[in-house]
Image (tube, rainbow, N blue to C red; front, side, top):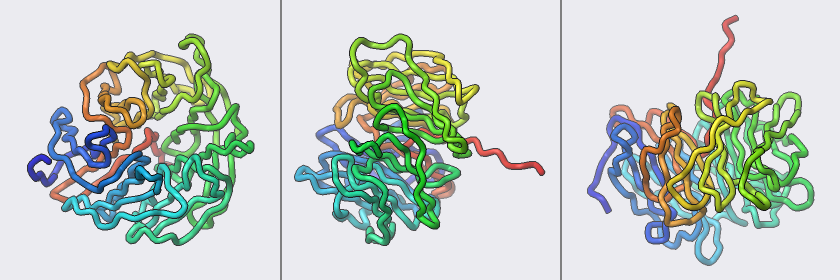
Length: 353
């Protein structure tokens, strides 16, 4: 473990390690100092599969969802002010990529992409206790609470319901949905005004984009791609300024596709970026200001996560293997803002009337 380091003022990337030797610990990188590693936080034991990370500006708490070697779904809660694990508990029936309410008081936890439960859990973030279940479909996987809300949920259900993206009202818990898409959904990302969502879709070389108000869905196909079936291209995100969407390729293809989103419903392929890795990416996200893109290797890999300049698309270097990353900024020792594990849009236009 590195010597103690207490962030006072600055921007820091908290990256949950997924390499076998360090899995579940958190490496903290100083974004403003060329991503210099400033400390590694030892957390809990028996982490087999890291499934997601969220944090709260309000409470200064960070949460990691993970599964143990015996297949138990767990969440641990970390106080970012002293790096203490406040609680670590099993969540019934299981967990997956979680989201957090902007106020920091609730966690929204899917019940695992390979599970049969037809609901997600809503937890008290201070204790991990279940306070509500929201029913809609089985095999719930990725949950997101974007800048403008509401709560979004994707599933891996094989009964047809996995071809829809679900929207959950965080006050009434009413459930609506967008779709059907061309196949079962994978990772997705929402713009800052919750007008458009970009989606990885099983069986598609490319992506689909949905306009949430109208329900209209368009397909952006890759004319040139590796041979064979795509499976699920796993990883997608808006740049914070929403000018581009970055998308991972297949598991064996070390490239990232960059789409111009000048017209969100008519994406244009702008560039194909080469990774240092010889394999594909499983996740990607950005810092809050949109200067850096973080492109993760295959799931639970020992390969490094690569940093790119989000504007020039040039590789800037490598950090430890992680796909569960979140920016946490401090001013005078207090958390001032947090980023997101997803590559979400951050453009929020206010009315001048």
